[in-house]
Length: 394
Image 1 (tube, rainbow, N blue to C red):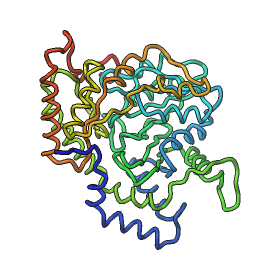
Image 2 (cartoon, helix red, strand yellow):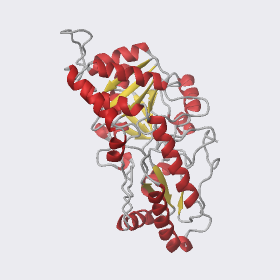
Image 3 (cartoon, helix red, strand yellow):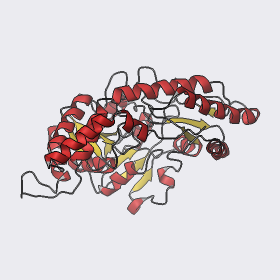
C-alpha cells in the first residue's frame, strides 16, 4: 500500500464544483485583485473567528511582518517567540528590523512556555509571538496575563491551527492580532501562497490594509507600503473550503484518535497530547522518538514501506544557517525542550481525506518498527501524559 502525506487532489475533487464555481465567478467578473471575492472572503474569515476584521494577504510571513509594522515594532525592539517552528516566524521579526528572542517550549504541547516568556522580558521587549504548533493552541490565557502585566503586544501565529481553540478563548480574542497561512498544506489551503490576519483592533486593520497595497487608501494616493495582496481567485478557493473547515478538522481529529488508540502501547516514541478543554485540529500528527538516532531510521523504514512520513522543523531556528539574521537574535535561557523536539519529531500522514484502511496500515508499520527496538528503550523513559508539564498548561 502507498499512503501519501497530503490529500490535496482528493479534497479538490470532493468539492470541485464549489471551487470551480467561485473561480468562474472571479474570472467572469473581470476583477482579479482587490475585487468583490476578496471582500466576501474577508467578511467570512472574520465571521468564522468572531473578530471584527480580517485582511487577506499574499502569505503568512507577510501577515506577521505587517502586523509587527502596524504595531510600530522595529529596530531596537525585541520580540519573544520559540525556535521549534517554521523559520518564517523569526524571519518576519527580522524583516521588520526587530530582534528575535528565543525561549523554550512546553515539553508536553511543544508550544511556547509562558514561564520562559516572562523570564526573557527586558526593557526592549515589545511583543510576544506564540505559535499554535501542530494544531493546538498555546496557553493564551497565561500569555495574555503576562502581556498585560508588562504592557506587551501579542501576535498569534496561527498558520497551523485554524479552527482550534482553548478552554476559555478562541484564536484572536486574547491578542492584538492573529495571523495565518493559506498555503496548500494547511488545514485551510489554497492552490498556492496566501495568508491573512484577523483582529478586533480597527487601527491594526486600517494599517495592514494600507501596507499591503503600496500604502494606498484611495486610488492614486500612496504612502509607505508594499505589495502583499491576496488575489481574488485564491480568495474564492479558500472561501469554498472555509465552509467545510470544521468538517475537515473533525476528520483530522478522528484520524488522530485512531492513530493514538492504535499506537498507545508502543515504547520507542511519545504521542501528541491534547490538553483538557482544548480543541486540537491536528495540522500535523507528530510523534517523537525517545532516541534522536531512531528518528531517521523510523522515517526511512516507513518511506520504504509506502508510508510518506516526514519531518517538520527538524532543525531548530537558532541552528539554521540563516541564524542570526543581522545579529538580531538572542536565546533566553535553556531551549532544551525545543531542541529535543526538533531532532526527534516525525509527522505521520494526516489529512481529512484519509481512510481507515490507510490509517491502519500506517499504524501497523509503525508498530512493526517499534517492536524491533522496544527492548532498547532507556530505563525510566515514558510517554508524556497530560499534566506532565512544567508550564501553566497544567
